[in-house]
Length: 268
Image (tube, rainbow, N blue to C red; front, top):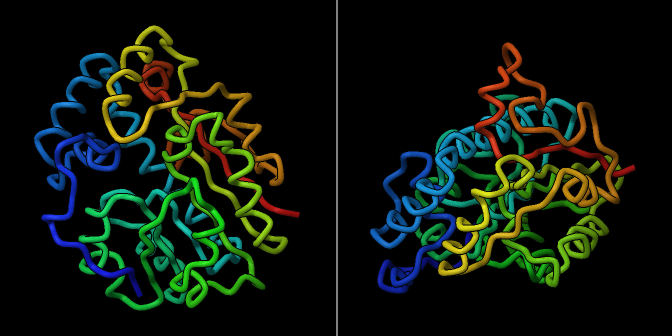
């Protein structure tokens, strides 16, 4: 299930888009010259941006495995970005092939790729929508046709909330979404921070101002505040490599290169 397909001609390539810039950080090819130029500007200012992007993907894999292993069989992934394998449904179905995944993004290029990479396997759907209008996401026919709101849902907000300003009320957005889910549902969040090397991030934010949305970095305490209606599980909100690593703990040098926090919480 998906929204109507978009043609390449309908995609705005005149301005960089964070989803396509993120694809570039990960070494992907689904981006345009304007995205590559903007991403390179960010990398010059924050050389660790690609490292943070890779740590973000690794965290996503661990967090998805955690919530699915805990019994959740439905996921709404908002801010999907350009599909990069293994995608959310691929990770989840490594544990249970029956997991349902609804992908949401506001970039038409993601919609172009959704049919080929995200929604051709059954029990998946894609919605072209914006996180800033959470009720529209909840009411969308694709979401309603795929997700059973009487059963626990994992809400994934991976590397997307730092594109929501304080005035746009990220806590209120999460509250609207969370109210629709029953007890036992989960919230998975990653978020950029300037707690490390704050001086680098000021100019990087200027690059994103020229893209489709501004970048709002937050402190660890502010990221913890996003989980207001969800109880954090151990180890809480931490730098991404510290969240239940698959192998050895990262070194101090490795940690210093990851400018993002992440956490998982459950609704009581």
